[in-house]
Length: 306
Image 1 (cartoon, rainbow, N blue to C red):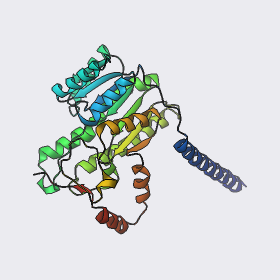
Image 2: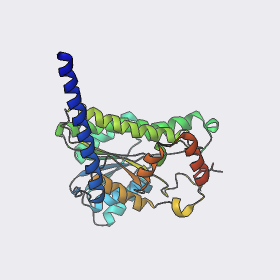
Image 3: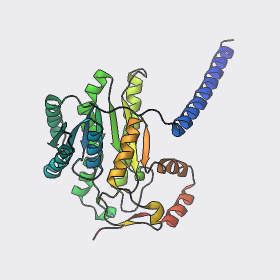
Image 4: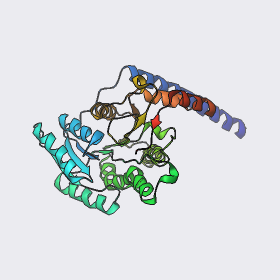
């Protein structure tokens, strides 16, 4: 009798699970075509790493334009201050610049404490800083491999450990991570870079699930992972593409606008351009040999720099 009862309970659970899956599929389709109202980021404290150039600079400008208090972090003090000054010239004076090597844990915690005292608790953390060396694996030296891993991946651990506690205490905040389209597929000359970006994707999934479980699903902290394709930041100087009309690069300004939009809509994941993510996910179900055929046909990648 007990086995029959347990079997019926399991059947009810399975049916309930199917209903929930169907509901969330419908919800996802609905929000895709009728997006939810964007969050207001005015008066939020937004910290952007790698704010001295490229996407990070445009993110800092974009958030400042929307009325947020912006904290710029970059290892390059000069370009970081230039970003701050450009924002001030726009009439937005709630902006601060701090020199910080995000790969250095002690420095991250020291500068984070300074930000807390001088600006306040960060409510939106944007982990954007990233570097790349376009080389074959056997041509990488130890310092290059270590540096890419430390900046692109390990730095996320330090900033999360520095800023998540206040978010958890208030049960309020948002973390944005800039991964890459190559988070889904490795590419030639990207043995180090691709691996770090794939790891960022999984890290964001893991920390989101960790907070959900330990809060009994009551955590209001949001996580958004972004997968840019080719953004014209200069990080890779020799892109190769057979169909430039389809694979053309996107300006950092346009990329930043898409990223801010995704964060304000509380999207778990988004891509730059936005249509890339569904394509990347769909391609994952193809056989490996089919993927190789598509890669050879598209012939998109990055050549070694001179």
